[in-house]
Length: 372
Image 1 (spheres, helix red, strand yellow):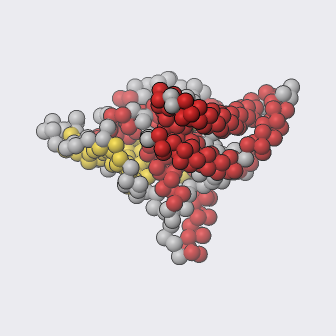
Image 2 (cartoon, one colour; image 1 turned 45 degrees about the horizontal axis):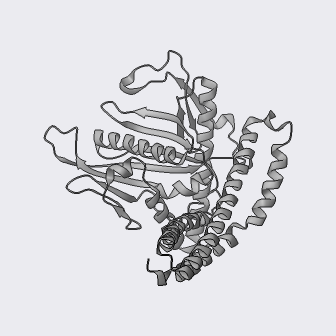
Image 3 (cartoon, helix red, strand yellow; image 1 turned 180 degrees about the vertical axis):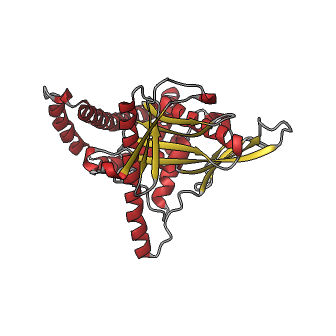
């Protein structure tokens, strides 16, 4: 940026950061941090490990958010002083250093601004993601496996723990479906914009004539349930089946019937889990997935009622939302936001932040209700 633009950039960043501070309310967050710190110090906290994990995770997330905001404010103040001194002393190298810091600050503030747009009812929660192969045969199954790796790599890049609950392998290659959890503050709010149908165009590695193939995979993103959700499922409403876990090619993973499939009889929702070591662990994991699906169904039912009252057709989550083109050119494009990049390999290796951020902004500004 030209030196004359620096004051304007400083002013714009100051206004943006002030707006973020008004939304985040660091003073209120600090009060909550103090309260949670008292809870963490309680001697009986780990009597309930699951509750303790939620408390400590929330405390860590709040501390990180407040520290990040404070650090950005401090950096902005420092660079303002640096610019002032460099201008007075006509120090070109120092001014160039200040410009570089301003560019970095702009990106950091923009990224933090995205977080302030996540204000939905469930946005703060962990995310439960299911990927399913759709039209396209073996290429679709392979594409579903590529998407699974893409999201796991994205989480890994950000240091977010993941847990795969169930993987159903296809016969020739790839997967029929997979369900996994991303454990991170705002994981659901962040990843919910990934929900929809993804499309891949490439020369099929499974076609001996080397023809171009179009295949599809669906991505479903749900918020993980918590104790406060009161999702009670009577035993009479469930059919629980146990079966032997299997891996790629049908090879036996173990020799006991430890995998669990639960059918919710009133809705017909079916979930399964086979990746834990015991039948009890698999049943508990499957129940968590079922609770999340029922929570999302309740949310969609409420949304449908509101849309009916408003005369709105509602949100078609099954619509195509992103294309990955490997041939005859290289491009990944979000069909809602028009955000695109020319490096599909990088995107499929987990470089998703640009798509996610543009999706969050699009959701906020569009007429489509946010998934909250």
